[in-house]
Length: 316
Image (cartoon, rainbow, N blue to C red; front, top):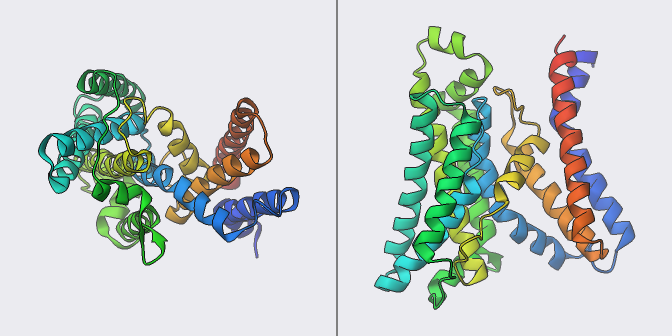
């Protein structure tokens, strides 16, 4: 294996070894609590929401953008879905309303970035703030209760002994993998992030691609928000706060370049599991939540540094 191929292998598959290493560490430290089937199912359930948001975030980051509004969208969608269900008694109307809101705000982000030419960081930072405010106005700062058991099933129920939230996560992963790896549209997403000028010269409709990736991010954020509200059994006004950071972290840890044009869907799943395993393992070890944030921050920083240095030096 040549040096360039070896470096490429490490960049793509190193995240797998990282996850295995973390699992081995916690398994040795807490074998009776961490390394059990029930705990791994719990980790999968805990990671499902973040991975749903991260898969949508990945589409955006592949185009060299970023979406800071995914957590806010998830929170608003959970509130809108719950509020609609309580008001009408119709589960499907509530789910449709929530998903529609998520896609709508994703489209708004895309239009601002693609047509108004506002940098993605600024555009989605602004919409994140606005959406958070809208959620507080909609809920009047109060949680929405009295949700039916049919809604609770989405985040709490099992289908053939498999948690339904994990099934949703798996379906989203399969769909994302097919779209990005097996379709012309997926190749366009990678191309836009890799070289926007060459993509434009090749006839790719840049604006359409940009709007669409933010819409996809909004859709997956909406699904994640519904799962979150369902798991809690209530729609909390601030439920989605902070999820945008974990979603971005999962994408970056999974090897997707913040510079765009390079990423691996499987890596994003593994990145989401790394965060979930860290949270779970450190909680089992009774490590303070304050220190947990420090550890997560250092892990994310290391991943970004490796990505940045790797792009600069390994491609030479």
